[in-house]
Length: 459
Image 1: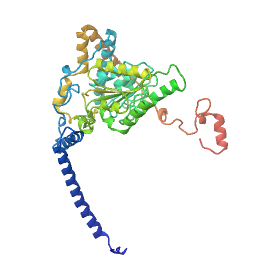
Image 2: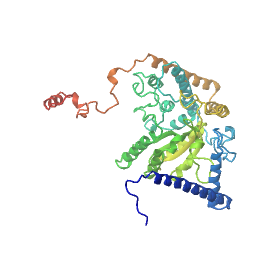
Image 3: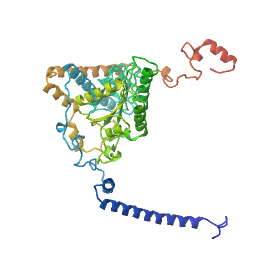
């Protein structure tokens, strides 16, 4: 047996030898892996192993030859029922049901309000009146209107940083939403939340969230308390449903999987709505999300059955299709049958935010989706089905214009927050002494002040 070197012997030569051996071993290992993959690819494609090897080898070749083009992973084998990257919108399956004239008017005005509100936000951002990061939802109005208009006022929603139109669809006052963007005291959060943090306790709008995935656990908590009130506290009025909105990129973070698991486990009354606009900031969806086994491209809605819940993919540029899908999911949740996952395929017509130069998406891609404008599409649907007349549609458009103009004037003339608001909504108790029995801060109680002074405490 070779003797161990004395402690005084330098170990540098030994380290070099280990490094060299490690590299050599790694090279041999990689050669073996390549050989095994090659053998698999040459094998029969009829068995599961052969199919798996073919998929993996195909993925490897695509990655090896990949060039930064947004359409590199889109192939002609994509199912027709998927997004209109290869198939024009008029070739896709249309909504099966028929809405009423009243429903059509509600949806059309809400979609127009959202679009015009976002356009005005962009204009006033350029004029220096709107502050911070601002993410607009132009192009995604059919999802907000189609989904949220299926809810009651006491139902809950959780949004993302692209939350303006969600707040409007939930019934929040456009004047207060615009004032929040202007950082004014009359804003929906008194000017302290800004673009990404719209919140309204009155409308059960549980907020927008700056980081992806943050809102899903909050939505899950809302759904949990509904079921707890109904089943544990026997509250007959506890039948509220929660909608959780998030983007395609969020489905690759941990909160998504964890919350789907818990929602299914406890049969919570929640609907997960994925607004798949193909781009997670600047990351193309098909570069970031792995497909399910047997698929060539990712289908987010297929993640639902893995957690024991039904799921559906819907044309997110078709407000009627969204309306139908969410109506079914909401009815199911309200009846105590548990959660649903809906993937709504859509497209945003602006960059990720107003600070985004939007150079990653091709002109051809933008032009293709511009032809599928959800508002124009719904307008034609309404006319074709004799739900509303041209004059009625124009009147609804004018009402949306007037509402946005009123919101701008209100926001611009509103006062700025004063210094007394500085600690509001930051700490439950600014001084840390807790809440007294009368509901006020303890440090405001004269008796508490006297006792504290006697104990040597500085208030």
